[in-house]
Image (cartoon, rainbow, N blue to C red):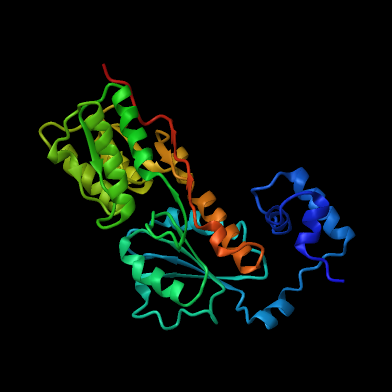
Length: 336
């Protein structure tokens, strides 16, 4: 008799999802529970006959990881964190195909014979046509990073607006009132949400927002550098700057140093994302931690459970939020 995941779950007194996590060496399971499940699986001589199942079910054993764009608005650090998250959960049985949606003239090559499931790191509402096509093809899809209004799509995201609110609130708590912002790439949902959260904090604390303090960026270091140069050229530069991602914050910091000024001595800076490099800048960057890696790992877990028949796509239709957190380091000073 063939041993199934459900058999192991019954003996271990856990859900089949937990068994799947243990067998896939997921980081989201306690070590003690994992070892218990692996021990039972070994005793039962459990062996996932992946290739045999693939022949029967016509599986491709390929999962697509798509971005709105790989060249426009996706920083290298954001890309790496997303890959790390998915890769931490992927088993050796699956191949990962990574592309930008804007690489495709049409979507005729995206069909069920080619992809068992798709993870979409969505940054723009322009992705809706892609989502519609994938759903029409019958391919399980999880949309990460951007809230989608459809109740027929699995959705895992962070509350960017709340994270930006935390950043602005921290500046205000430290006595800052001359606060500037470098926005992200135009048209990206994260840009809109971070700007909205930032402005809401200023409104709630009755702090006026100067038009000249609102700078257009594109999530790349160069735009952070150039925006800081423009801010420093003002007659009345800000004392604090919120950058919509860490890459732009690092660019802004370098422009500050190039002009012989210091952070936080002359201008305090807060970033967004908490990339690995942010704690190693001088000074260490205060930033909003967006758990991109965790978000992508949860997405990969969910898509694998659907592909392997352990759960139905309908089981993941709720919107799952991962929390942002303000990481207070050394780039903000208190003003009197």
